[in-house]
Length: 226
Image (cartoon, rainbow, N blue to C red; front, side):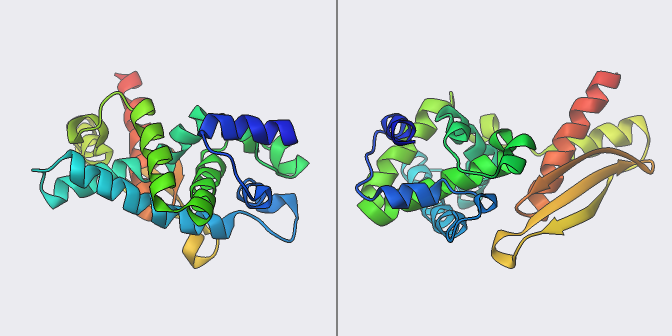
């Protein structure tokens, strides 16, 4: 276990003074310890929101607030954090139950995203904003070829609506099929329906995120059918 944690610290470019804090950040609730990473995830989410906001404010000095918000939304979400988590091979380091692991836990986007947020929260607690800012920005710049509105922000709901209107003469419907978790960690599962048939479904931290993700999947399916 010690070597594994060392390997992760090398990937991060940061060595924890308090190893217990890192272990907590890597502990999924299924691990059944007196601690898990949900509180650190909550903190990390807020820290990353600020870091990315400041980064974009400085990078795009002439962009309007609406555009900055859209770019931030495309980076600060489950998909974005899952991408950064995978660049660290974070799934290999997370502590979870055998049942969760056998259920594909090490590859789950939500689980990887949450662990990434927790680690950023842990670094913030131990070393402060400047340190976690440098680490997060470095990871973002290494993992995105281009950071711009055109490249990052895709409104798949609009794309899907255009496709379905052209092909079927109707607009898609979105149904919340499930919601899970406490209020501050709520996840929504949304299905997209076309002519009463479910085309795709996705899980997100908000209904809008889940709708966009399910719309993206439905667009891919429809394009294959053409």
